[in-house]
View 1 (cartoon, rainbow, N blue to C red):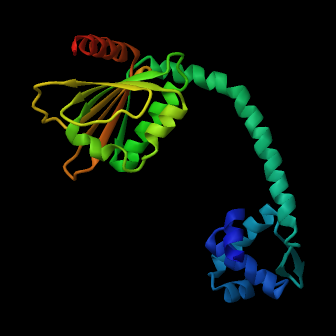
View 2: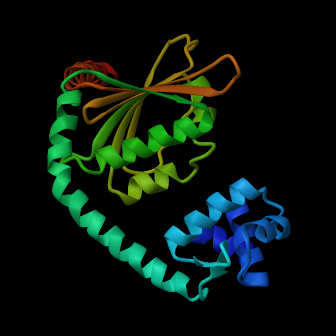
View 3: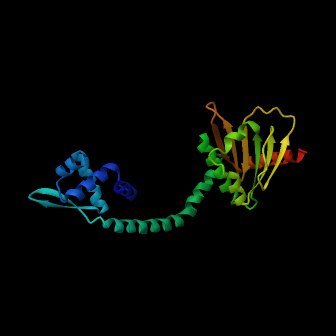
Length: 247
């Protein structure tokens, strides 16, 4: 219990050993602390210097020997409160800086921007990005091409996706390739008839982005997000034309 709490405070395993040894035996030399904590002398000395910087340990000299002494553990509360003040201060500074950082980021977005994702965790990140991006749009809607053979892979690690989408008042239009697919709410679906479905792909058009999800050789999903306004607009036009032509 003590070790876990000290880890949350920010101390690492060897730092905890040195600190607890010092608390147990009181003012001690590096040699004794090293023996009791079972951490080599050089590392113990470096750790003690760090604990001094944090404010958990102090030192003094006696007969030309250096001794280290623990501060009252209640000092940790003061340290945490100081950290909170620094975090609040840093947050305010970052808020002031964000417009300048976003200006730099916008220059990147003027070029096609590609991100790669692997595995089921990657698929979840893509779906989370869909919800996050579309929820900020004036027209909360996105478009999907959905192949039958890939649907079973999509929501394994995000089973509440549709519920989250509906909760955020997001609409979706789906062109289904192959059989299956169900309506969950705030969605429309059309099917491509007489299509030999042999391409396990899932394509999402949303905002200025297009996401592609396919199945790799290890039978796990692979994903790509392309962020490019012109490409997204073109894909949206093609989707709209195809959607209107399906009876």
